[in-house]
Amino acid sequence: MDGATRLRPGSTAPAVEAVGLVKRFGATRALDGLDLIVPAGLVYGLLGPNGAGKTTTVRILATLLAPDAGTARVLGHDLVSEAAAVRRRIALAGQSATVDDDLTGRENLVFLGRLAGLGRRAAGARAVGLLTAFGLEQAAGKQVKTYSGGMRRRLDLAASLIAAADLYFLDEPTTGLDSASRAQAHQIIRALAASGATVLLTTQYLEEADQLASRIAVIDQGVIAAEGTPGELKAATGTGTLRIRLADPAHRPRALELLTPLLGHPAAAAADPVMLTAAIPAARSAPAPSEQAAAALALLARAGISVGEFALGQPSLDEVFIALTSSDSNTERHS
Amino acid sequence: MTTGAAEIATLGTPDLPVLPARPRPQPPGAMAASAAFGWRALVKIKHVPEQLFDVIAIPVVFTLMFTYLFGGALAGSTHRYLQFILPGTLVMAVLLVSMYAGVGLNTDIARGLADRFRSLPIWRLAPITGALLGDIARYLLAAGLVAGLGLAIGFRPAGGAPGMLAGIGLLLVFALSLSWAWTTLGLVMRTPQAVMSTGTVVLFPLTLASNVFVRPQTMPGWLQAFVKINPVSHLVDAERGLLAGHPPPGQIALVLLASGALIAVFAPLTAWLYGRHQ
Image (cartoon, rainbow over all chains, first blue to last red; front, side, top):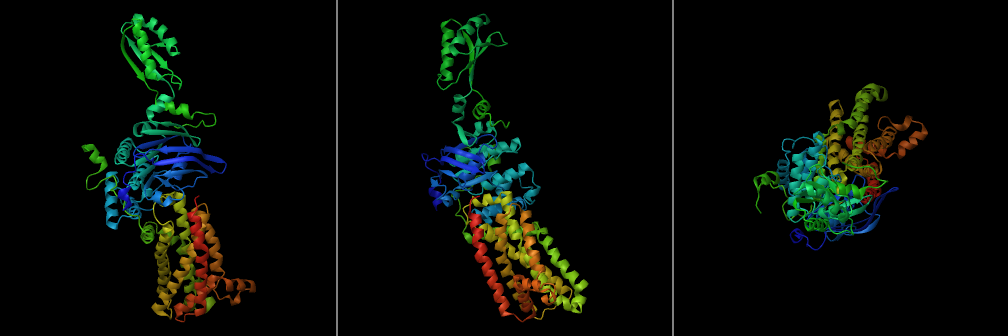
């Protein structure tokens, strides 16, 4: 009955604590000293280009692959010496797990239900429920080899939901899904986290990480290039943009004169005669973008220039991602 | 917790929830997990029957061809020759089908299914022991097909039904033991096709250079020497005796000894290879 007592991992203990993970495949270092802390009870995004080490990380944390160096604890259990205890509390979907092509959709779920410890009847009922929820009831009796890519992904995601887990590894679960199925997958992922579980989500979609993940780690060439909330990542890299609408177009030349030395970047006149834009530098040593924006507005006010409207925009996560993962040796990029 | 209509649609109903129930059920024991894999193997026979018939075609064709083409010349009459060849082709059929133990395991690994199994809280060897349980059905089907064909065209073993059951029983024991050699091979080779062709390269000399089709007395000395040490020959002798109602204790003991040796060598090897992280 350990399931009940372990229902919610303590909010203080991280779901994943990995230190210095190294994995070599021949001459390639897939992981090159990866450190990762995933707090419990939230959706955590692992974001990176193909070949960055996302799937290798998931395979190691799901006990499928032994690291060449480094240690990791998953839900408080040592990955190597307590692998069986880890397996009792995790679920896996996506690239690292799959379903049986020769069996039908229903047979796959019944079979995996039995392996999860459900009785014959409970496994059958669970299969029906999941097939219905994922819109696969029409295809339930057909062999999976006849399924489309999107149907396979939905069945695969359904399979990972057969039995409750404290940590779900979802390895690119939405790749190949249409927008309606993706929206449903997003809703389920949020509901999993709301129920107290932790979801480690790998994705190539920046937008998906931005929408779903409370924290994101950007992985590149086998190490974590950056980690934080989506907002922190945006704030830490790239530049914000201040947009100002003046009350009087006649004030614009004077306003541009004032702002350029303050922000250290030339302010620009927009096509609209009352608009001007200024890039806000976001170097770590510089004040927060909001402070710089406030200083700019105060300066204009002291000069007697009235402002009709202003906006401070964050860089997109796309810009952050490109900035963090750009390097000469890794030019292949995913859109 | 308020739940809107849209959420009910995607998150299921109280009767059919999408999110899993807590607490998570206790993981199945080694027997229950093996039984689940055995069930999967049976379902596969239903969905992919060609896996059975591909290899069983050979012993069926050999039975018919040797009996009607050469039977008269070899044994004086096709009827007499059929009594001689059928226990041999029965052995051949089941041994050829046993190769699929390795092919199936390799396919699971190649397709990534083994990864999902490894991430589950089940006995690590359950995928293999379960597949062997399913193989019993496959071996019975293969044996039944060849024995049925034999009976239909005039095979009349003196041992009757008890002899037939005993013969198939011994054949099952040997085939299941040999299966561990195939699972070892399945874990070493890169593709299912490679397992299949390597298995064929091993099995065909063993079944052809034996006493399956002709008595070894007319063979050259060096070939007789091989036929004598070939375990398939001893298995075929044991089968002929059992089917004829005169069980040969020496041959049966040899077959059981060979079975034990196969398990002693290849079961631990399979377990070690499968448990090893790749």
